Image (cartoon, rainbow, N blue to C red):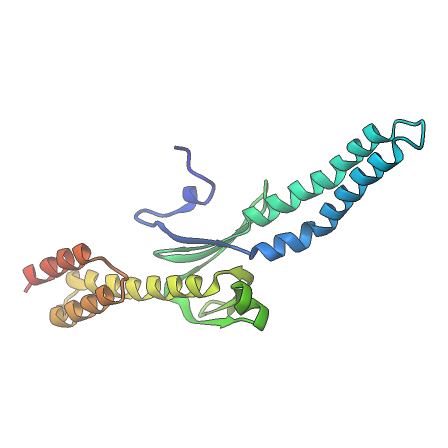
Length: 210
């Protein structure tokens, strides 16, 4: 199976946890006028056919191709603007043919702010603001669908990244606090971030180092 553009950019042992896009209402707002225009052209072609001698119907259907092309373009723009959480980064990608990619390391993420209006809570969309320690400072994902799930995936990935970093310190001169690591591992299991099998495997590995 061929990899998509984003998968070719992933590092070794990096994998995608969640993909998100702007809410469907954003796409609908971009194409609603084109839908109305298509309906109007079809109705006009059908109504005017028996009135005028000029072949209005073929012309009307040809004109329909213009807003159809616009709808296709708007859909591709919406579809290719993705917000991705991996086990290492948060990535924003856009563009149909030429691509624009912005990513932030989870290690540099200081805080995540979620904003939802009344309509956002009703239809499940909102803005995610990511505050980082980089020079950019903040990155805002506007009108993203299912923002609570996206925020939770980010925070869980960041917490798990911190644990994996601590668990990988056995090569340092100071021995890791294995009981504390096991306790934190158990906490991740209770939160559903890791499975029971992963918990038992890592626990056994840590106990073997004592």
